[in-house]
Length: 336
Image 1 (cartoon, helix red, strand yellow):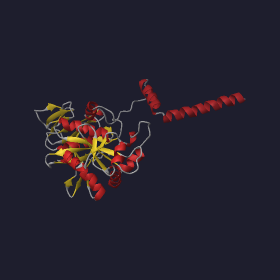
Image 2 (tube, rainbow, N blue to C red):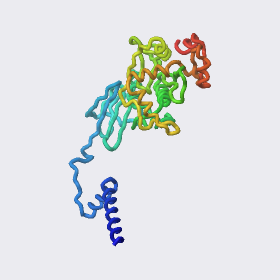
Image 3 (cartoon, rainbow, N blue to C red):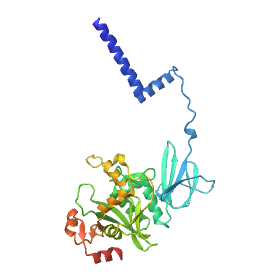
């Protein structure tokens, strides 16, 4: 009798487990469904839509705006080149022809199949080039350490996720190829140091139209002004220390951070910390107040020069390639 009860109980438990497995395992349910359809025991469901109903979509993104563009009827066109930066013109992609006449970022989406994007730049407006790159790049670390060539390849079809050093070095190379003068710059804190939040890497771009060096933080899609005047690195750090009345302007309104994959080499998840920095402008300004207390500019020897004599020993102790020079020489060397 006990044996029969044990058998019945076992069958009952196995039945519950089998039912639970069917209800929760999507892949198993799908396999069973396909088998029943193949054997004729179940009628296939005909969906009221298919991939034939999908059509290509194209967008133009510049600064904080993104808008859909439509295809044109044009007999003269070129196939979309396999380079990230292209000149303006009429191009065919996904069997549609688009007029890409404005400088900026163009995105092409074939739903469920492929994404593509290209930057149109004719050498006219460097800020539109920076805006396009800003739309492509988001702070994270899954692409950190990749070569410039791999970043250029991935950027034709995807977002790029990297740290501030990644985007800054990629930018320097990209701008050099477009005959735009730029240089790598850094800032650091004079507050107590920790292992994760002591400084920042950005770039300065020489703006021919302004006849000056201008600071750009592509890691945060930002540049800075005071009373309408663009700020250089040294002007930015001086403003933070003395006035703190600078204004932040944004080159794009893309996602600011890839918190899903912001991890250190030992797999520590920094997403909570990172999101607290980038969540709004006030928290971003507080972060700049910490990490932008010292200006450092990379020289021809790949060292970073600074001119803060009062904190010379502390700054030089932070990194072996941080080298002090006199303030007057600093200004003459880098800003005249």
